[in-house]
Length: 232
Image (cartoon, rainbow, N blue to C red; front, side):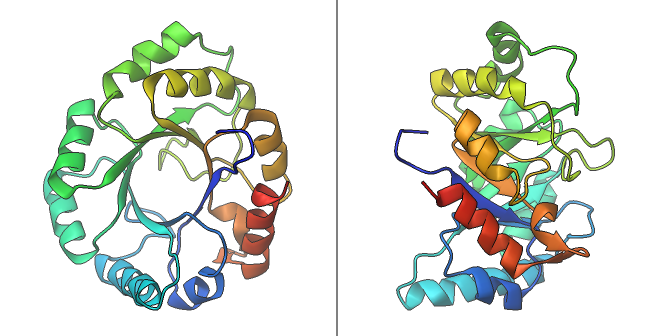
């Protein structure tokens, strides 16, 4: 992230047009729709309804966020069927998807691809740049961003828990050399996101459960989260 700029903000797990109407005026860069098994999972038709609302706002001159679909090990057929109904801007892949699969997604749908990397809640040691390169170099040219998220044994991510942030700098160094963006998720909320941004300066931050109250997106928390990312 260049000096003087702010990380991009992604609000994930949107399910309601009413919530979207309440936050579309905020400086949010990405809105995420979860298609993987989750309590926040949406159908393609619901995602289409949300995307259609955004497009109507764009037609009136409003700058709207890009739409992101979150998937865990989808098949090509599933993606073809879903994107035929819900025309996404970004496909976010959260499991063992190969570089070849990521390239196919980019080329087939003409979308950006974000690839998630799961980080244990407490890593034994910070990996070296060589170790990160061995893991991620095959994805160079196949993805637009790497998303660091806390490992979840069931869903891959979306655990609502933070990981060991001291590993961020080496992934950020790799991302700079590779020419891709580095995004951070996992347990972020209004109370800790500014600490993350100030200390590590990732290219973007991603939040879902951290802006919810009793499992429902909370407009006040979303507003506070965005304000704390974009304040000087």
